Length: 266
Image 1 (cartoon, rainbow, N blue to C red):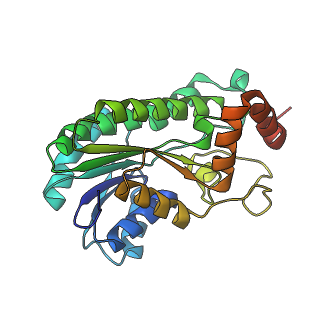
Image 2: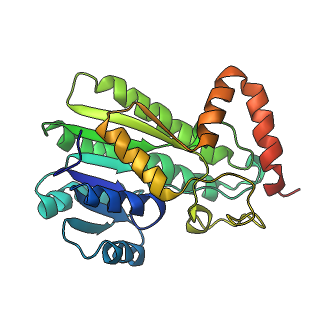
């Protein structure tokens, strides 16, 4: 689906990959409905985009089903239709072992990462099926196929997104709606801070991981929409670990543990 003249909803549009998706979609001639829980960040996105123009902002908590169910009407009022949905909003968990994670944190991560995607997709799919063509993109994670110590519940939420998306792909094959699942590796964003999570001494500046810029990530996602890709890998780390995990899953699990164990408290 070419994005020019299409109306695309982007969650997490206030920062990171979501903000870059807004910019790149606008540049390609799309109309964009940017969704985020943080009004200040949404306003900043609008300002950086040079004013509203073909961009509307919607302050919505994706974990609030009743608020999500009101969103299609708001988007259609602003743009006349809706052709695509990018479920990008997500958070990580505290870097602690599952045994040390309380239920409040578990529910928070599952609600944003999995139920937020479910609510948005369930709400917008009937509208997309009414269009000549439509597309759904769900952003999973390298942690959605690879076990990352200290991110077990995050990984479970993203694995859920992966299977949800792949199931949707098969169900929607006879329809006009395409479906893409995205697997970002390490991306140079403030996801830890935006998730309210401290990573101790681990920062972008001193990290040994090769990180992909959100600009590159957004470009790959938009390209995936336009080429109707089933899967989009973002970053050499995600591509490499995807291959290794399929060939030697136990070896891959031990390798990622060796790289990430310093983030876990003793």
